Image (cartoon, rainbow, N blue to C red; front, top):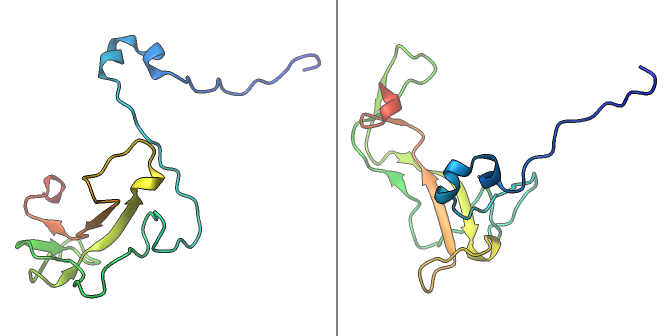
Length: 126
């Protein structure tokens, strides 16, 4: 319509405590990680991809018993031998990339690896 303007959505609040004051006492400082596409080096903080890993240390494998997968057919549960499943690299974070984060003394790197199979103690496995 002539003379009208289209306004976009309201910008997000800078302080969530102002939106929901009942939860203000539960507020904690948080760091928002903002991964960007690219090909990070192992000396960076990547999400997925390669991790900096010592050449003389074996890659971790899931040794938990009772893990399994459906494969391509959910009716066909396939048991997997413990120790046969290499862990999947998920995240590597250097302390220098996370403002205010403190790791134990002498440590500057946190790595997450994950077993991609189902385990009998997984709540979502049933």
